[in-house]
Image 1 (tube, rainbow, N blue to C red):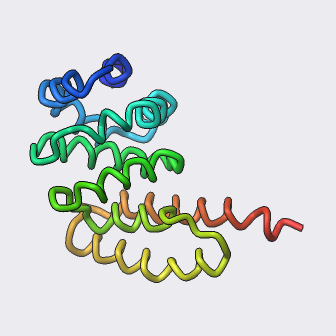
Image 2 (cartoon, one colour):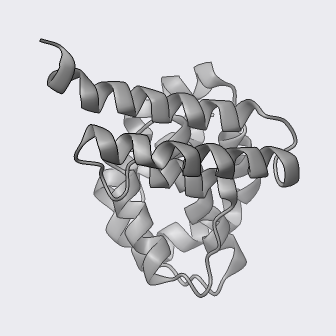
Length: 170
């Protein structure tokens, strides 16, 4: 799995990224479905790729199914690894190409807890019901099991604790 991440690091143009996606789609799906330990081992490299190459990702042709799948894989990995600094960059790409890219309910829930960034405890609490409803719908209609939805919820909880800890620690 680390070889696919290493290959991503070497990409320096939209054309090479597009070719990489076509040639490595099966390996990208495997990475997306990898065990937690495997993902954690490549966390820093993935975060670096997403942060420093998001402009290349944004220039992909999203009328192409493989490119759409790649963007959704990037978003899924960012969400599962709780890469809070990456998600807004990828969301901008999704929003720009919304006529071609459709998010499932779990990804929508995962995005909604950090983008737009909540500023107050009330903002965080206000999102709770919406996120829970989306995750429940995802479990019932979209996901094979509830594991990814549970991870999404735990990341929301973690983000909420992180954002509120400074306000209420004293």
